[in-house]
Image (cartoon, rainbow, N blue to C red; front, side):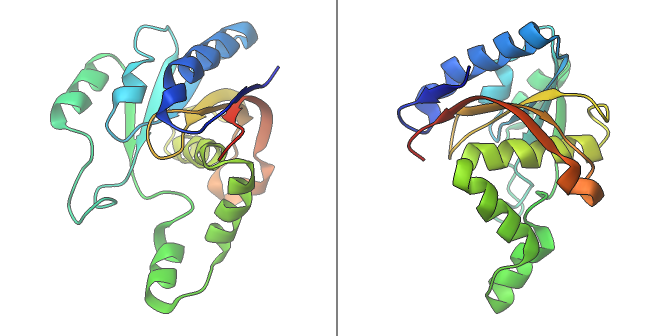
Length: 183
């Protein structure tokens, strides 16, 4: 059963984390991918027994040369066994650079805009799952639970079987665990 939050955003973080963990356990899923810029949301999965990948914003996303996650949080998550992935986002990169320079919309951004029809967090879940698979942080061909959000915190969780980026359209969103109704 899908849970629908009445509003988007960080007010849903605790319930989203609980729903994601519960569904992973129900389905016997071992791998969880979570979007977390500061590391606070990712830290909520420490001690769950799940293999956790934390996908952050790339360095420079907020401002040139700025890493949004503190060195102390990186150390804390690493010590707890959380794999950290900080890299260019799948649906940004060169397409976004073209838009900034020349205007218009490009293929990756069209895909992102289409996924946002289901909510920003759902777009994030798809993106981070493919990124984690491409980095070799999760195994190919298995379902994982992905957790994302709108702005800060977490408000969306899905069961997803990601495909590598060059086979992106083979990605399968198997279940929506929870999402905001108002996004």
